[in-house]
Image (cartoon, rainbow, N blue to C red; front, top):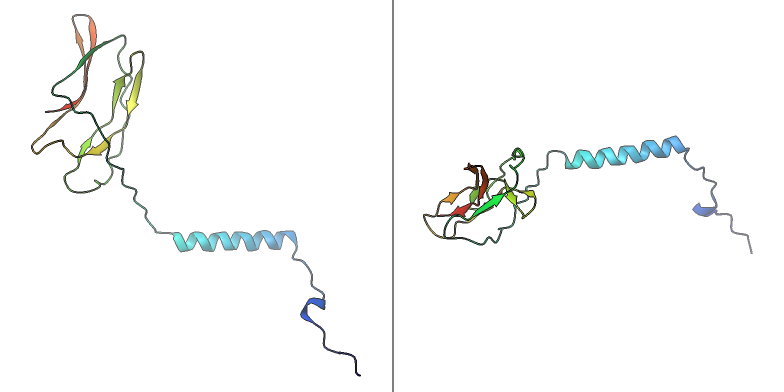
Length: 133
């Protein structure tokens, strides 16, 4: 019986790549992945927000003026019939908090959004909440 003269692939000596070569290979793989996704645009539409609708303005006397408004970017409407309600500061009993702008469907046909406002009346600071009319 003749000994087997064929060598398996596993018995071949192999040499590990140097650290810099592995780093370059990893960077190349990452760049190719980024190149495949370049130019893709993912648009996330906000979910409709449940809002309590009031019949008229509600007024709250506050202890301080609101901070300067935050500038927001208006995104794409999630569908027909949505109305953009811009962001505003809301009084939470002892402090102002920013309410981000959002798209809403008016509660009924022909409804108009009356945004919140901040007024000084006879030395009192008054916050008038926004509502659908």
